[in-house]
Image (cartoon, rainbow, N blue to C red):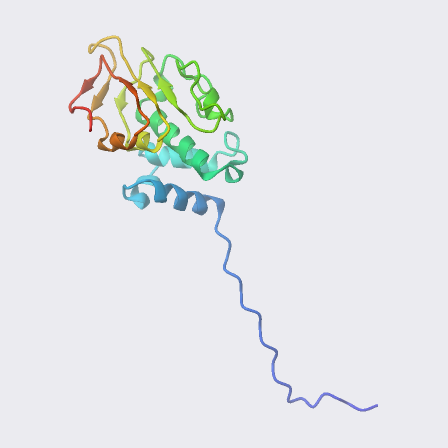
Length: 193
C-alpha cells in the first residue's frame, strides 16, 4: 500500500463564522429605538421609567407576550406604546384596567370605545378613558399610535386625580385624529398643531 499523505498538506480553509444571532430582547430594543426619538439606552434600559417598564414587559414577559417576535413590527410598537401609556398614567390605579398588560390582544384591553380597533383588528383607532382615574403625564409614545381617530381622556373635574404636564408635542403626528377630549385635567400647554 502506498501512503498518499505526504505530511505537507495545506490546512483547509475554515468557513467564516456566521454572526451571532441577535437575542429577541436586542431585536426588540432595536425596533423600539427606531420608533422613538428619546435616548434609547437610558430610557429603555431603566426599569425606573415608564418606557423602561413597558420595554421590559414587552421583551421579557413571555406570559403576556408569548409569541411577540412572531407578530408584525407595527403591533409590537403598538403594544409598547400602550404599555408606556399604562405605566405613565398609573394604570395600576385605574378604575378599570381589565385586560391591560395581559396576553389578550390589545384591541380587547379595556377602553370606553365601542370599537377600539380598525376593522381588520390590527390598528388601534380609538382610546377612550373617561372618568377612569387616569393620572400622571401623557407619554411621547402616544404619537406612535398613528391610526388613532379618537382620544378621550376626560376626568370628572380638576380636583380629582388628573393628567398633568403638557400634551406631547409629537401628537401632531396623529394625522388621522378627529376627536380629542381632555377636560378635567391640569395641562400646561395647548394642543400641538
